[in-house]
Structure formats: structure tokens, C-alpha cells
Length: 334
Ligand code: SF4
Image (cartoon, rainbow, N blue to C red; front, side):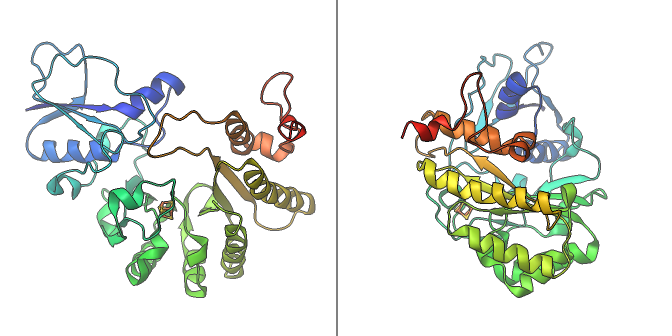
């Protein structure tokens, strides 16, 4: 069979930004499974005419990104999947158990692998589709299954690994013993960092500037993040921290929460003390109304926080996202 693949989000991103940041894991697994069964797999080519595709797979992760905007006329069968099309959509089990065929991706270094140790999450944050899509947290794959082909730099996309109890500890212990370098790129839950976890996390080799990510989506979580960071640093961690901060409808609460981290960074830089702590702001997307416009203040706050040169150099009030507009005006008009 001839198989075509379309990364719908990547296609949209390439049109907009010229690059795909994360690989579409589902398409990699589909590629592996079909190649294992003797099929020819390629990125979809609308100009293929000599023999039509037997199946074209379209994968869409985000429900707010645009759909593929062209008619597919050279395929016998088109299969659409991913949360962007249907929150309940899952791969058939025999495909899901495969590792991605990394040869299909153009920009993945040869020592990187991507995967999940767990699926699901016990929490129910209102902005998040994970509990609805994946349910409670369960073990999914062993880290050695992910580290194929000698790949030792692992991007692990678990949504809440620390909530997976003894299974998670065994996996992180194995990561330490094997010397894998990892990034839990969906962040850790600081509330779950115990003394035992802090010791383990301080021993892990972290990817990307030796960086640990936490979520800080509410003001209350500031103290949990501080506590977790202090414990991990206490066990010898010397890297930086990266805090995802969800922007909600309350501008003042978001400002106060991010301002806390901004001031902390300014103090650390001035006094040359401590581990760097950077925030990353995510505008709120309503999972049930993904096309709801993002308020301008959220876009501006994210533009300030997420561009380190801005976040380091000046306050939100001083930030000038557009000629003639400084963000202090958000407060003046109250
Ligand atoms: S803790 Fe993270 S994964 Fe779990 S529901 Fe909240 S945002 Fe989603």
C-alpha cells in the first residue's frame, strides 16, 4: 500500500512560522506500523498522480488551529484523527504500542526520542482536555521502550508524572541509572514534590540548559513552586527552572502571579544569586470554545513573558508591544 501523512498543525505552523516545533508522534507511529507491514510511507504529496494513495492519514492535535485547507483528490481513503478533530480519538492499540519512525521527521536530532511514560491525570483543571480525553493516570510505557536506536535525549510528554506514585519513581530511578537526559516538557506538579522526589529530581540529567519545568497556574501554586525548587536545589541541582503560567480571565491575578516571578528574576540577576527562574505565559483557550478570541492583554502579557529579552529587560508596564502603546495603559484605564 502507499500511505500519505499530513501533519495538519505542522502544515498550518509552517505556513505561519516556517517551522514545526514538535513532531507529530501519532503520525510517526503510523509510519512505523505501516513500514513494518511492507507499505510505502511518505508525507502527503498533492501532486502524486502515477498511483493514488491507498490511505492518507490527517492528524490534528489542536482544536484551535486551522484545518487542512485543500481537497485530497488522489487518495482512496482519508483517515482523520487527533484531539483537534475529536477529543476521544485514539490510535488502534497495535499502532499506539509502536515507537515513532523517526526517519520521517526532518528536524529531529538523531539522539532525541519522544514519548509518554504515563497517560492521564487525576486532576481536573477547567482549561485542560487531558482528564476528559485520557481519564485517570495510568502507566503507559517503560522509558527503555522509548529510548530506541541509541537515543538518550528523551522528551517525555507526561501530563502529571509525579502523580503516578511508585511506578513514576521506578521510571525516574531508571532514567537516572541509564544516564538518559530528559525533559518532562508538560511540566511537573510542584505540590507533589516530596523530600524523596526532590532527591530523585536533583539526580536526573535534564535537557535544555539543565531545566526543570513546573506549572504555576494559580497564585497559591507560587509557594508550592518555591518550596519544590528550594528542596531540589538543596539536593544539589544547579540548573534553571521554567514555570508554565496559564493566563485566566482575571488580568490582575495573572499580573500579580507573573510579577512575582519577574521580581524574583530581577533580584537574582542583580545579586548574582540563586538559580534562574523563567516564566512562560499561555493565553487561556476554552476547550469547549477554542475559537473564542484571546483578549489583547493576554497576547501582550504572553509576548512580554515569553520573549526573554523583554522579560529580562523591563517590566510589563514598560513593555511596548505596539508603537505608541505601553502596557501600563491596561492599569491606567481601570
Ligand atoms: S494538572 Fe495538568 S494535566 Fe492535569 S488537569 Fe491540570 S493542567 Fe491538565
